[in-house]
Amino acid sequence: MKGLTMALGAATLCFAGTTVYFARELHRERASHQAAVTAPTESAATEVRAAPAKMTAAALSDEASADVAHSMPASKGNRQPTEAEMKQLALEEARKFLAEVSTPAGRAKALEQTKLMVRTGPPGMDKFLHMDADQYSRFIDLLAEQQLASRENASRCMLDKNCRYTGETADWVAARDAEIAALFGQETVDRYHWFYRSSNQRQAVAELRGRLPDSARLSDAKAEELVRALVEESELITRDMRRVQYGVGTSNYMAYVVMDADPDGAKAAAAEDYNRRLRETAAGVLSSEQLAIFAQAQDDAIEQHRTFQQLGQGNH
Image 1 (cartoon, helix red, strand yellow):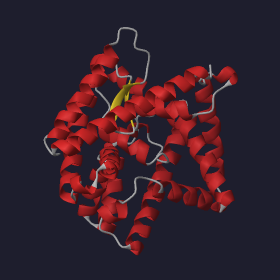
Image 2: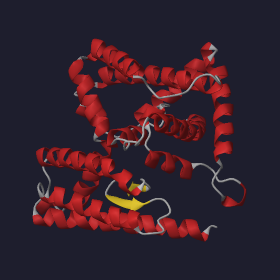
Image 3: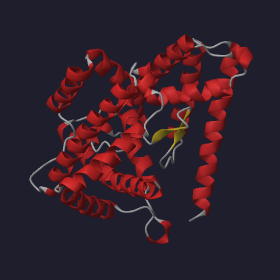
Image 4: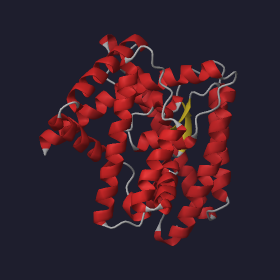
């Protein structure tokens, strides 16, 4: 079991390096076809955080790319790897990956690793999809097969100098969803998409519920109402991020924080405004006691981010 855990960790790290490069290439590709780049969707960011094995640049936002980049091992002098280094790492991993899955044993191993990574997504998906253990196991098997195929396509494209990777096409996504619907029904497809679209907010609400005293317990119905309200506001916020050239992410999914250089303070001002908007959204669902604890959770998340920043600066 220890060996399997180590293998999973190594695989995840390799996926991370390749994912960062794919994300940057996709951003460039889209920018070349648009005069104004639209903001990456919250659902995209959500999917990446929830399922890092999914090697699709379409599922990455700039903020998610930054998160993955910071998780990569630093190069000499504790600096972040350069774009050329990330590209080289991605090419090496693509070649290695395709060689491994070209054999039955290698493909079986890669599939098992992918299943494990799918299972390490946000907890509670089986309950949310109303599946028993057997149904959920078969569902995970299908997702793993689809995600492995997606990574194979992306890796082949990366090694083909004439291929410009633009993420999963609408046809590919439709075919994937049709395959899920054929085995589990359209309702499962819809609930699965909503689960991942809302996974960041679900984690935030789970954090909040863990802080609430029994006297201020949040019912399941109210929790779902809060999740939906936060998703809608977060998606509006994400679209607004292009106003400050992005560079704003979340800490513990509870609060917006500055992730990039902010010489004029515009990103900090935007993050403060976004957090105010989240509190106002939550106020429409929560009691005054619950809202006060929600606000404290935001403050704690911001402070945690500051602490990490200070620790990072101390290492340079």
